[in-house]
Length: 448
Image (cartoon, rainbow, N blue to C red):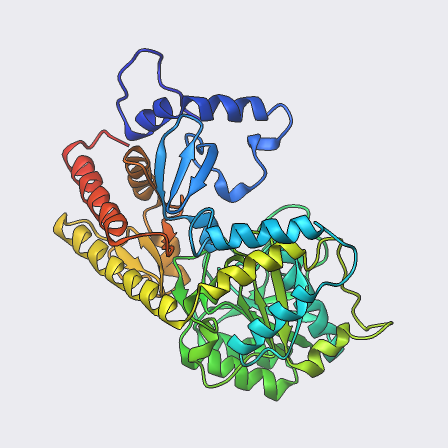
């Protein structure tokens, strides 16, 4: 991590940002005495150092140096109403006051499950978890118990949390179109992985993988868009083919809606003419608190049922009352009109950013879905994982620093999302900041 020379004028945006966030840099350095990298979440690491948050309010975050950032990260899509949404905070406080963790079921569990079932037609029964990783873990375990099979199929570039079976082929070199293969570990320390990987949105790859492993597959897990790879959307026809092939093979279709559930009142799947067997959800549904779930067909979910279930799913903080209360308050303020309004604002933002890049003659693809967007510096549309892998990461890093200096916070991989706390002026501020940042980079080739 670079550190500007004391007393010297910053020469790059990275230097300017580092100088302006001195307290964050020192705090992270001190934290390294007890914490690897000084923090607890690898996603938040970027050069020269992330800022350390002190508080958040509405659309803004404030760091230890008192700098305010217009927050388009929103804790990686989970803060649909921004920071400190008053109804969610009040509901959480009331639930906590009754008992933070009663060690017994609460009425909030049924209330929340009914709300999810009203919104998502494919979900009949629900089991709650704390994190999306756990929801995926139990979805895959349920699929194995229900089918009596072991193997899982996922897609390159797909991210499904920290479960060993799906911590493969996330940032690996792109596969050839039409092919499939074993998963390439995305981290050290994985156990035995029984996963086959196919190419996203590639019918030939999917069919070849299914044909080769038809009688071994417990489940195919897929995201409606690649949340870790430029938000590339699955074609409806591709999802329909997964549905058809899994049904024919006696395998389950697991739709990972942990990120995409913000795209519609009933998640991304509400636009489809069919439903998955199991769905995982998280992030948005918790109102900024740790909450996730796996839900789906009753006959599949019955593997969790009874005094001696086929799959034992438990956890000290599952269905944490404060999280359920905050989530219900969040969903109460997230009705169809709210979804459509924010999605329309997201579409308009993508169009404006596309216009700004074109005006500066900078090759870029501004993609995304609904209220989410991704910026990739590349001279063609990002339609495949191969396109995503070819984008100019170092060029984006320069722009990321320029935006941070201007008090605008996007993720280090170029992804952002809107919250209902944002006004038109906030969205316009991002567009203006990008315009100004591109002008600076254009006029000063040394600034980075």
